[in-house]
Length: 257
Image (cartoon, rainbow, N blue to C red; front, side):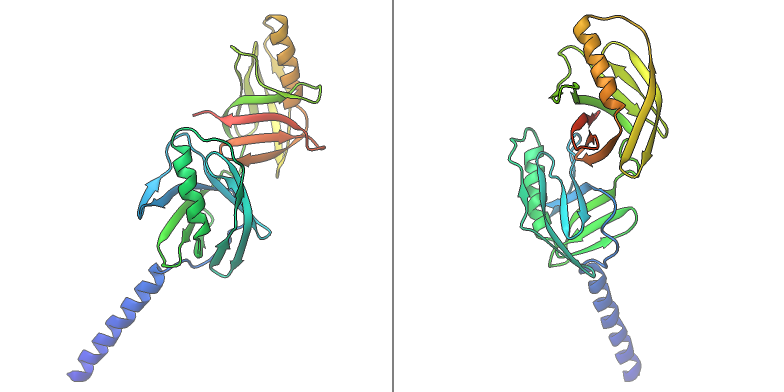
């Protein structure tokens, strides 16, 4: 009987230790590849979701991490060895943040600097601190970073300048699996596009033929020319930047709420 009781106690201890190990940190995986979008983080010891309208992300590549903290862009070294992860020191831009983005960013950068281990699957990334507590949870960004509805905050006017839309006009574009459509400030447009990795080619585009005031018509011509310039796609923080082969910005898109 004593042997049976001893065996039961040993089994219980082993199960307990095994459970602690499973809950004590990450198991590794492939962290490079997707742009990870933050869904939840630890704030004052509690899992807290990301407020609507705030976009936080991370891309791990070549021993570094970069992304948007919700307001500012950040970058820094990221050392991965098995399931361990060491991040920092981090550098970021110093743009003033409004609304909840400031608090989200402050907590996020602190959590990222406390990373110790991680578990990555095809769809999710979870980062743990040295105690094994979950501090950051991400989901994989879309395979097509263009998919969705966007408003245009800047476009290349063809004179080596990126300008904002004319006050009172709205420039928009919606990308589906293979079509691009939207409003160019006066007329609506539609057409096809192709995406090969980070390279995108939009057009040819067809539009309606309504006449507007000349400045608005000039804007439309410049915007559509910029949108149809073969470009590479940069995606971070709910924003997409299209750059031509020389690196010049052609169009800046921000996700519609």
